[in-house]
Length: 282
Image (cartoon, rainbow, N blue to C red; front, side, top):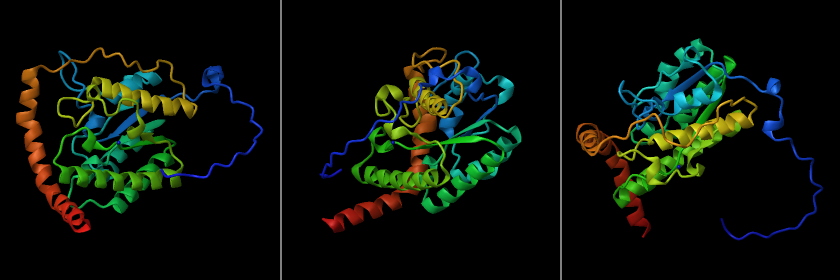
């Protein structure tokens, strides 16, 4: 997910440099014993399938391993298709009961594809999510999104519409993050975010590498906030499974195309407005 300026030279006495995180004694670092992952299909782990036993791994277990959170301390009530309101009403109650030290939140993209998209309501729901988890003593880390139209090929009018929606969503998230003073992972600035290797075949969900990049981004923010990260996330893919060509085709036919058809019909009216406004502007 800049014009010309007048430069004024000012001499500033440098402040004493802060010691690197590695120099901070282990006993001074916060230990995350309980972790919860909230959100949509990316939070579920889609795009990072596991061999033999099936199912998904994804960013959650990778962050848990990096923080040293065991199975009893890990909770993931996320589900595919979840919107921000779903997180607040259906996932947060379980999260609060778990009393996590850290909560990761990946939600909002499903909202951008719906006809009732309302950035103000998303901001209100995100604020409520943060408040309820903060009352439980949780450090909440949401994400702001990359421009998905740069990854997922779309007709020009749909591309402009989706980019505009993502910009509205990010503006709402930025406002909440600034007001509440919480950490936020900016996917648009994540190294490699627009490289195809970071995405699964559907171009909607991260690949194993993409999930590892997300996990590295989250743990980097948490380390900067004083949390211990005893096992840093590796970007070397291992433990997952690369879907076969037949698996790719099967997913597209059974899941991908039907999903695009449903969401496309809901999104087209908004895209038509964007196209009409562009025509009028010209």
